Image 1 (spheres, rainbow, N blue to C red):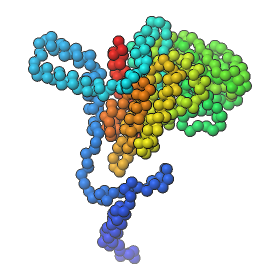
Image 2: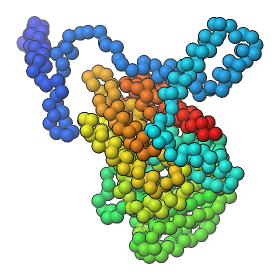
Image 3: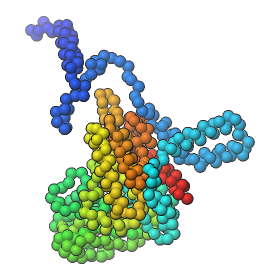
Image 4: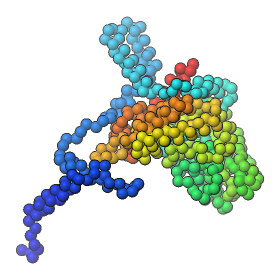
Amino acid sequence: MSGKSFHPPQRTLIALVLCFGICFGIAQVFPTDGIKVNDDFELVFLDPSDFIPHPPAARDGIEDADAYLAGFDAVLNEDSVRQAQEAAIQAEADSAQARALREQQQREIEARKALLKIQAGPEGIKNLDEFFASAASASANGEKIRVIHYGDSQIEGDRISRLIRNELQKKYGGQGPGLIPPVEVVPSVAIKQEAEGNWKRYTIYGRKDTTVKHSRYGLMGTFAQVDSAGGKLSFYPSNMAYGLSKKFSEATLYYGSFGTGGDIRVLFGDSLVQTIQVGDSTGLHTKKWQLSHIKKGIHFETNASDLEFYGLALDGGSGIQVDNVPMRGSSGTIFKRIDRSQMRSQLGSVNAKLVLLQYGGNSVPYVKDTTQAVNYGNWMRSQIKFLQSVMPDAAFILIGPSDMAYKEKEDFVTYPYLESVRNELKRAAFETGCGFWDIYEVMGGKNSMQAWVDADPPLAGKDYVHFTPKGARRVGELFMKALMDEAEKAK
């Protein structure tokens, strides 16, 4: 026998019982809401009931996202459903049972259509009928009109926007991916772009670079500069884009000179097309080219470190252009901080007829009471009014926050004030003559995000915030159905 001391199991049992007892005692007196140490750190402790085994409670919210979304299929295919019903009647198969089933199906379709509906206040949705009229005649008139989809990181990479663009261009005509930022951190499926050299990207949203002493961020809220060693920006059609987005016949560069000026060499593939000489502090500039062959890309070379590049529009000659403008970390309260004369100049020149504003998600986690929700709604209302003053002929639709979940003990649940934020955004929309699309309710409402994450394949990511590509596609399909329902009403 070795010289090691023997540790009886009874001691381990006693230690575990004592530990359990101490923890249970602490739980009895520890505040149920936790102890806040600072803005970023909070101490929480188990509730006494957590020490007692119990069966899992039923969770509020939809259980199966795919089954729930299948309920919209009859709405998305409403024409086919109606044709089948009419065929059954003509075939004299319209029994009492068939009529009852058809009436039930129609009630369900109407209920889902009401859920999908773009809501409006007493003033309706200003300029929306005019948008549909312009869209219907744009191609025939050789006119180009824009739909600008502003949003937070939920639309990064052209998610949601790409389906809206494709459906609108198929229906009304148009080509190309629209506006592209000069430098992007998240690759877009709409376009392939590269930046060679030491380019610096600046944004009005997120963490602002304090070295920037002006507010000239342009209509996309961003600009880029390169150092004196020079650099190159390249843009190519994307193999991942929809077919119409891969084709574009016009390129428009937005840039500015507010320093010593310089040159920009423009190349289509390997061929030098133009050298632009930009004068000292000559302000904003726009340059447009007609394109015929772009497989080898469009390139811009410069060593002018004072030049500010705001974006490139890759469009067709007429029809609908849909711009995807994601602003990671933004709550949508930044537009009034951008240089107003620049915003008026750029936004006033692009012929925007419809503006989608998809915000709220970045505010939801930080709203701790209804007063903060009201304040956020008021801020958004002032932003909308400013944008309406810049684009008085455009219709606006505000898309509220999707469901977002955080972990509470063992469950992922909707943030406490998400519905308050949603309600205040809806109020802001109604008071400014905007439409409001309630993506939260369309998803399934409270605690629906869990089901979207659990879907196979997943419709949302493990951050319980962002949609997967498949989830974004479903959202885009449902929004387009709601928008096309408005188009039918406008006829």
